[in-house]
Amino acid sequence: MGRFKLLGGVKPSGFIRISGAKNSALPVLCASILSDGETAVKKVPYLRDVETMIEILEDVGVKVKPEGNTLKLKVDDLKSEVPYEPVSRMRASFNILGPLAMRVGRAVVALPGGCSIGVRPVDFHLKALEELGFEVKQKHGFVEAVRNRKPDFVSIKLDFPSVGATEHIMMTAVLMNGSTVVIENPAKEPEIVDLQNFLNSMGAEIEGAGTDIITVKGVEKLRGTEYTIIPDRIEAGTYMIMLIATGGEGKIEGVNSNHLKKPMEILERMGAKFEIYG
Image (cartoon, rainbow, N blue to C red; front, top):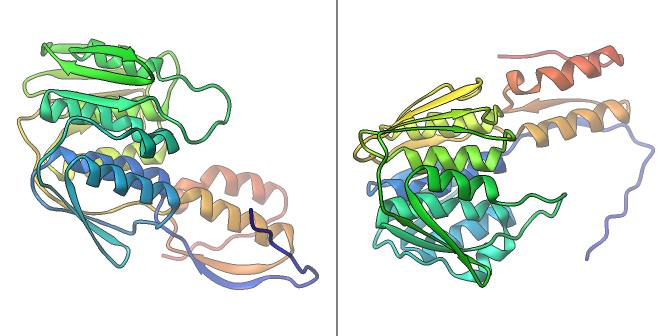
């Protein structure tokens, strides 16, 4: 592992442009398999997790063409099984199970790896997929989902507002043509709203992201789209705190201040000052 040597004693100043949100890019890229049309996703941060997601998409039959910080994606010939190695590296990759099974009728994905903060089982995901009409089996570290029925109406109440489970249900339900899926107690993060906006730009019918109830009305198919993901609020907040903690002053560009209201309120109570432009 590399090391950083920090030389203090200088107040930082200047400006920094914020990247696109990794936690938005991952589900948006995953959802690209839901359309046969070409999709262009802009402001994609080139991080290790994003590279892993690209590898998974290519493994299942998506052609990915990078152009600067834009990724152009088009489904070629979808395969039903995702290789173990890339999925084992990143938890968010498990969310491809439902959308892939929805497209091709069956999908096999390894149990996820990635961030190990606490115990975060995939039980919410598997239970939700069963309620959505899939037969789910676990065997030797893999999960198989087979679509065998299409309920007209499903109401799923999450025991915990899981971001991953909320995204997984949204992406899976969107192509359940003629069905209505209601998610109670969903996650409300800005990345959930961004996924809703992305899917709706493809022709989905989803409303309620960011509130206590999300409603998905399944459609027959989705079209390609061009979409810019939201700025990374965690990256922006990190730079804000760094400037304040060191007595520095700077401009943080390309942020959505609505996503930073709560930390800004707390920092202002501590004596920080902000000016919002645009």
